[in-house]
Length: 428
Ligand SMILES: Cc1cc2nc3c(=O)[nH]c(=O)nc-3n(C[C@H](O)[C@H](O)[C@H](O)COP(=O)(O)OP(=O)(O)OC[C@H]3O[C@@H](n4cnc5c(N)ncnc54)[C@H](O)[C@@H]3O)c2cc1C
Picture 1 (tube, helix red, strand yellow):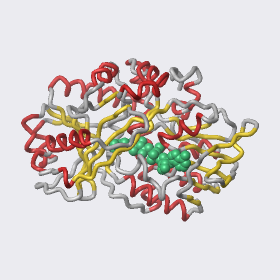
Picture 2 (cartoon, helix red, strand yellow):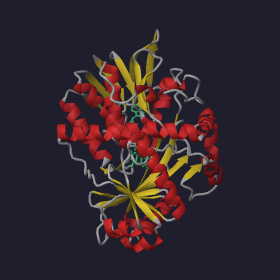
Picture 3 (cartoon, protein in one colour):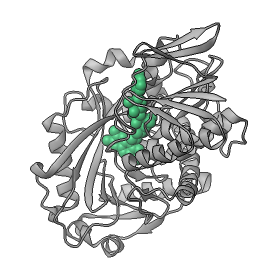
Picture 4 (spheres, protein in one colour):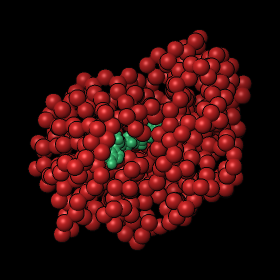
């Protein structure tokens, strides 16, 4: 069987690897010069089954409304983006009911936990190196009531999906991560999630693309797909720069740009871009060295030790496909990393800023599987969890396409869950 995959980010590359492992002949087309150069490039570097919650928590509409016109809000809505959000925006809010939020959280948790097992197997199989560590992550919380809520929610996820965690006092936190000593007195406590991992997503993409190439995958870079040609209900070819590429099956794994490609075919998949930022400090002067990734609940950001450097990432902005890097947002992240690690001496001049567009689905759960167009499949909508879920998503897609037995419930991630329209996500 021949397959063409559009996109070589985390999701397209893992899909290619798994399909090639099952003996398929795979070609990957990407408009960039290499794999992982868009949203998968400088993300938060965290693999976090501990953060399975969609970003439309109950009450998030209040946060969104309050964010209009503010530059320091973690979840931010730009007025100019409103017309593009349309039914998606309404669906995003509708999925923030407590029952839907909880159900969608558990779907993400199941795929995330499974994905880390698949990733561990991939590491053993390929020997791939991507600066990975597996010491878990720390969540620090300043408010005592918020700590109780986080703990109760953790217990719920433990019962529903097997998430493991350990409650910590402020002293425990400082003992585990001495670099946090300067803020120890501000903390009510926190949680350690032993299952979480760290890794450089870009390095992983490059390394896995190389392993996929060794299994026969052909990567064509600088190959923007301009059109997907459909004839009699099936894709006949994809067109890139005047060249036609044909196969038996086609997969769209183009991240936030997937809906643009599919809209031309009359398929409106409920995925929209949610912009986020990161700052990377390659040579931080921090003693004692910082070794455990920290999620700071109050600042809605993560601070992550990565290959001798430190990366801070956060914020979700609904601002369409804008990839500008406003100084105000960079400054927010700088303030934040200074608040978490005040002894770090972080300076703007040393910071490497970056932004990316998370492909955010309307219910916060990825969309993996067939489409109403006969031989067209999709793997997208992973939002803030694309690195966490990449290996499991690539494996799930290839199981579905090759007649293998899926190791997670595929209905939970199927496009068909929106059959009642983009506002619906009742099934699965
Ligand atoms: C600030 C930030 C922090 C994040 N932190 C984390 C984290 O800590 N943990 C985590 O799990 N996730 C995190 N994420 C989310 C994660 O990075 C994304 O979910 C993931 O990268 C999405 O991968 P993808 O392959 O779907 O998309 P992409 O990486 O964007 O890949 C899509 C590919 O499609 C190609 N493409 C698009 N259109 C076309 C076309 N027409 N023709 C040809 N090629 C095309 C692009 O060039 C690109 O290479 C973060 C995201 C951001 C922005």
